[in-house]
Image (cartoon, rainbow, N blue to C red; front, side):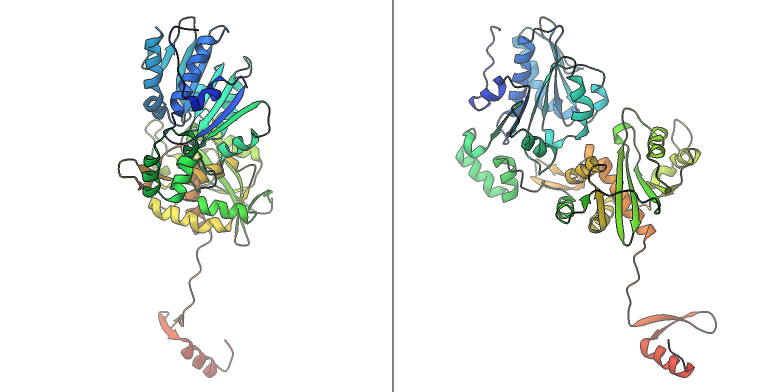
Length: 440
């Protein structure tokens, strides 16, 4: 193969050498999974006999791919007399093979290419549609392979993939728990156990899918909705108007929830995300194609600001497309998150049409400070935050559409003879009724 020997950790050897087309590895923290991923790609690049082989490493964020994988890939490039392109995070091997790093946060960069093999690292943190809509089609014409690897983040798409691979002969799967691998010293594990919550330790070191997602804002509420049967089939009712609520962005950063209100229940019937470089007009066409009867389009408060490129506000853009924009009241993010938590118990979600949006709500979490070992008082900005922001706006729109009733007290307001307002007690009203000789 080559004079340079690529040595894998014993625990990963079977994972690296499997000949099955699809593979999944669930590994504990500091097990060396990123190194194993890079080794798998380098081996494939050196051994592939196809014309101009192409292999990719995909992390949830492009900067993350650069920070954690480029150092290893560049090191192998130097040993193997390959050419490393720092600006494109690409290595060209002798013979025409290429390995390149990508981020799932910019899926458009992946479109239109072919792949002979791809590794998706920390798949639990990725937008679910990246695999089915973008990467899987890239493997079709050359029968490429794919490997999924990561640490659990609750029962999300990564968990579903793990379960699906259980009895499928086309798949190889392996779970590497810290208590089994022997890669970390027992004293280090014991210290970690003391400084972490049981849920954190089980997730990060024992590969538990049952532990709640750390720092998740809506994890408990979505889990309760699942238990209550409120994630189900929710058909569109043509007799009830549909409201849309937008997080305005571009492409995959554009997120829209569609909901109806009936009998104190919020029926979340659909969820839309932009694709490619979609802007407002493309998303409006998608909404029109749905065939719903719309009442209003709720947009963020800053949608009234003029854009430098067009000189128009996004409100004006929506109006020109015959939509009915309304502004979400300006609010602090924390207040919006609390409002979203409050209304989740009223929500019923369509399981199929809202699948990606629900996964975003499950994955929406606080930013973690690695140095202080605590969660920051601010959400993490990633693929999940756009749909989560749009849902926060949904909660604020619901407040406007269905104001909270005033709590009854033992004092009520009455209009005096001069048209002013006086405060009177219930005893006063009873006396007034007696004098009037009629019931109130």
